Image 1 (spheres, rainbow, N blue to C red):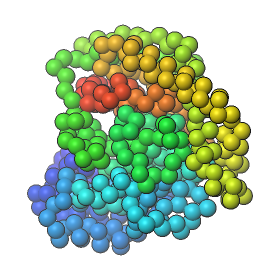
Image 2: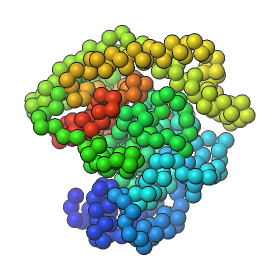
Image 3: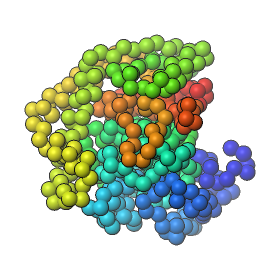
Length: 429
């Protein structure tokens, strides 16, 4: 970015480098972000809890000490289902209004250890399900930002912070990132520790992140795992091998979004990528359906206390979902898990030589209205199959709102996925 770039528009990597070199202070960076939030928050509504004075005190503390790590002085937003010892964690529910955890979630502790400034808590849907909060799409406040990580996606897209954490049980990282026009990354299942994060569905919940550069995805992933940048920053000595995957629900892609993805595939092929096509067997459609059985069953267990003790404070939609889960026989749940096991085995055998599969991030642009967060139809399969996936901003749709391209990688091969994404981004971003 240019030397006169406003500080809130810096990437995390760029900001951290300037802080480390003494060219800017953490206070200057956080102050600039807070001023932008003050101007835009009444429209965007990304934050459920933010104390400017506390953020500045934390920034001053970073300025007064030697750099702790690679995110020293960088402000980060935290989805409000993740515990924070010095801020409320309310899970998007009146049941937990004013709740103060005793400790940080593991990922929050890792960010603090790396020197990050925890800016505040971002809006989540109720228990990371479907009932939306107040956040709007930064590109058009009449449209949804997606969910459930609504506030995190909107905060990064509106340059309030360079990084934010989210979670995905259905499509809660990839979909809002695509709707808001930022990078969303859901790593392979189990990559980031979930201790201190309110569970929804234990066998599929995955922590992910929002950023405006792939360098920041790599940097934050290394911080959250205690690893090295190279663990996530792969390289290719050739154009990538890509597979276009329309999937069992291709008919749900809006015509403009479908055409956009196919045009992207042609553009990438013309630029040198080897692009093939993958047909979806019936097993993947069965795994997609099994995902819902698994989620509602496990969510009923995870929220048993809330359902039994505070039923009157649950939204009708969530109450219905929990009732369905509670009524699901264990045998049906077990059969669903077995279906998914077979689908994971099929994917491992049939991913082929591809570095990544190309597929829609969402059915199209962010829908109009704030009563719902959009359809996760193009995300649920990859969540239940535990694969890493990443969405890149890829132009605009007919209503002028962002569109994304989703890349899906092999399980535990996140570095190769990110390497392919770097090549793709330079050509369709």
